[in-house]
Length: 121
Image (cartoon, rainbow, N blue to C red; front, side):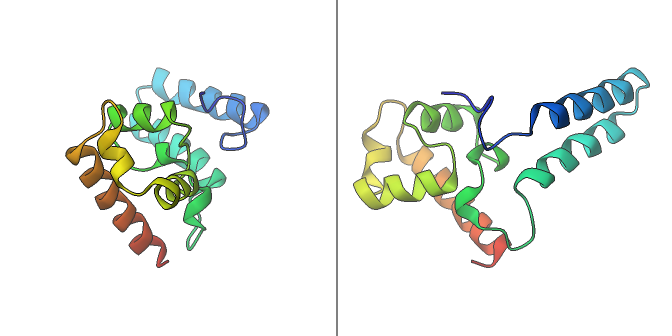
């Protein structure tokens, strides 16, 4: 269940244009400009000041790859999905799923707190 082709990504034409810009910058060795192009694309989709956290993909936060993969396997792609899962099953479900545990739970709590404070929600 990947993020390709769903409402959380760029439209195909926007993705193509952004990719072309990134490639051009990388070929010139301008890594900072390539990073800026990717950041702009990311921010156009979700990261607006005081945006609703529930619509934000977990992949835009600082989760480690292992945690992102774990969440995706359980159908959790956005902070809204995460909130619903915790509301339905409690935080303990993170401790019970294979690959979950105390470290995963602490990471989720830390990042969720940061994202809520950043958006002042």
